[in-house]
Length: 168
Image (cartoon, rainbow, N blue to C red; front, top):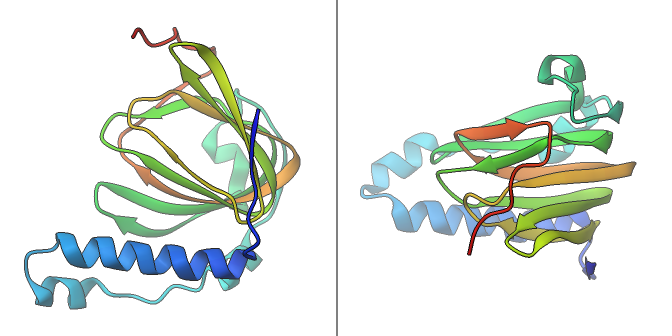
């Protein structure tokens, strides 16, 4: 299992990540006036304070059951930017229209990717970041708890049982 750790604290990661998103957004828009109309400052720190940790998430847990454990911060390109706070294990998911960016704000999670070789676990701790490639099935294992930040393209497919491995 690979371990990804950083000497940055959570705030540093967000500053650099926010700058990355702004640069990407600016370089992909055709008109400057479109950029300015959509610019909105969002306090991740303040939004995190409103989340309530959902204890004991399972692959069978429905989104509606998790209440205030997740918040959508903004729409972004073909998806949304989310934060979440929970303990437990997610269902399998994949994103057919793009890569997903995942960063851990606090705690830890093992992000399990399903590759042609089988399950591949990546331990992410505070300040860790990984990009999940488009169409790769993945799930989160967070028994000790995690606060996570994601840039998630839509649509998202969900599956409780392990999907078939991708073919080479």
